[in-house]
Length: 451
Image 1: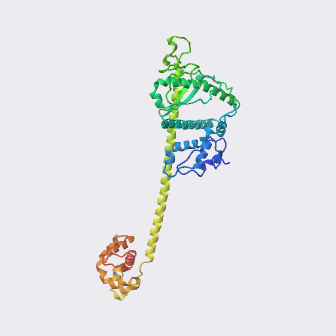
Image 2: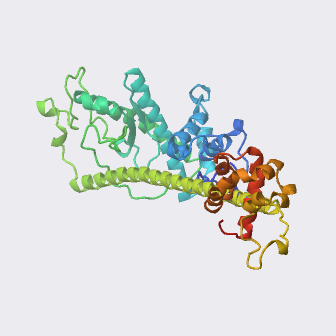
Image 3: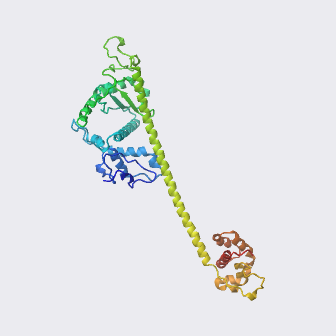
């Protein structure tokens, strides 16, 4: 085991890509757990990604598709659970996965927030699969879930519970006549599944914690719509709040939307009430509506924060890549400078060595270097016959008409361009080029002028 900060330095991360280390009750090891030991927890999900690493074959792909990659890690951990046969643990105990999740996270707000986020990611993956299941089959799926958790000491009645429901928005929009039926199904689920689930949850939790906290329980506020607004205008999550027992009932074969009934049992036509005819506490209704809006805004803000984090990660990745490219260019430039310096040094050490003229061969007013070296080679081939190819010594008079062209090449072209430019001159034999270039370089180093 290592210190808590050691895991963040794990070498699988690459510049510009960083997955936050999940909070953990115990310090995370520097190496991920073996595949067969991974559990359905934030730490298990993190270790799946540590095993797989990040996608590097396309610049920025991991950050752009981060939610998909992390969802695939959850799917890897979840695959096969519906067929594993472990569906009936002891009736007075939570499932092992519940304990794994609870024990993997720290206590307090940090652990609570991480647990909620993990559960929300699982629900999102479930809803994503249900959405695609409907699309590829052309069918309709209805998913209903009650968590079982309630406010301590709250009455175990439907109006204190709520159900998270997946519904295809297309079906809801195209079949308003079925809204009452759907509301009735969800209410029945809350009454006959949600209430027993909450009772079981409280009994199991009482073996772990004290469930006798004193807390003021506000009166439940009844919903006013058969189908609530979606939690997100782009999503498929509907949060149904429970109603009192029997407040919604269905006719045997409803042909139109059936409104909720009142609690009285009169046989009059007034036995069926429109939802707007029921009187509610307006202040409480406004408060619960504000809470629902705040919850929806928080979910949207969470999505925006995720998008902002992804953008920041992409920016860091691009910055890191730019810095890496800059370092490569600097290294290449340094190599090029060293190469040019070496070539110039080699050229300077291999230039033709000239012998001085005899003082008697010139008048006192004639400078020692009044002519370029290559012109002196042509003019007096006997002086440098040992330093140049033999054909040049015999053909120098035939090249005198090129003196101005050669001098122009020497003064206006770079050293590296001389061979190419000389080869373009007509009448210059290939055997004469090397000696000519040596003489030109000698003049360049000595600072000689033109002809």
